[in-house]
Image 1 (cartoon, helix red, strand yellow):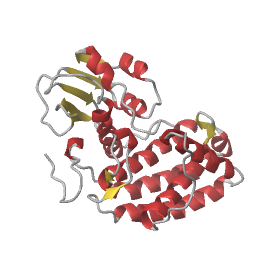
Image 2: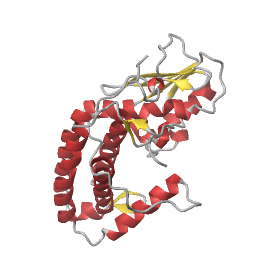
Image 3: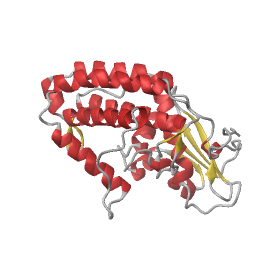
Image 4: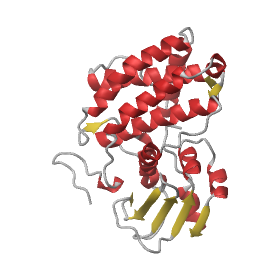
Length: 285
C-alpha cells in the first residue's frame, strides 16, 4: 500500500498515485489544434446539451482562469453558494453564468486566449507537488484531495471536453491510447465512492476490466470501513464488469447512462455488484 507523507491524510485506498504532469502540454497542444481546425458551423454545433462548441470553449477558459486564481495566485474572491445550494447546483450555476457572459466573445478570441492562459495552466501543473493537499474531488468522495488526484482529474476535464468538441465537429474520439489510459485510470478512482453504500462481506471484490490498448484492470475490495483500490486483486472476484474503452469513458462522464453501458458490457459473477459498479460517475453531475 502507498504511504502518505507525515501530516497528510491516508489516501492509500485510492491505489497507486497517478502522475499526470507530463500530459498537460500535449493535451493543451491537441486542444489548440482542434479549435484552430474548426469551421464556423462547427463552432455553432451543440457540444453538450444546451452548449455549443463556442460555449464549451468559454467554459474551458473559465476553468483555466479559476485554477490559476485559486492554485497559483491564492485569489479567494468570487461567487459562493447560497445557503440552500448544493455543490453541484452551485458549480452548474456559475458555469452557466460564465458561458452566457462570454457569448459576445468570438471563436478566434477564445482560441487565442485559451492558448495563452492554457499554457500558464500547463506550467502550473507541471510544477505541482503531487503529494500536497489540494482541491477536493467530489466524485471520489475526498476533500481535500492529494494534488496528484486533483491534477489527474483536471487533465480528464480537458480531455473529455476536447472529445466533446471533436464529436460535435463530426470527428471520432482521439485514438491516442496513452492519454486515454490515464483518463480511464483516473476515472476508476471513483469506484470506492461509487460502491460506498453497497453492503458486502469484508474481502468481497468487484473488478472492472476495460479492454484495448488504453484499458486495464481495477479491483475494488470491501474492507469494512470502505471499498479500496489498494488491495491485491483476486483471481476470482465476486463480480467482473467487462467494458470497451469507448463505453467506459462515456459512462464515467455520463455520455451514456448506466443501463446502456450495462447492456453493452459482459458481466461475470454477481450481477448486483456489477450493476452497482456501472453507476460510476467521474464528473460533477
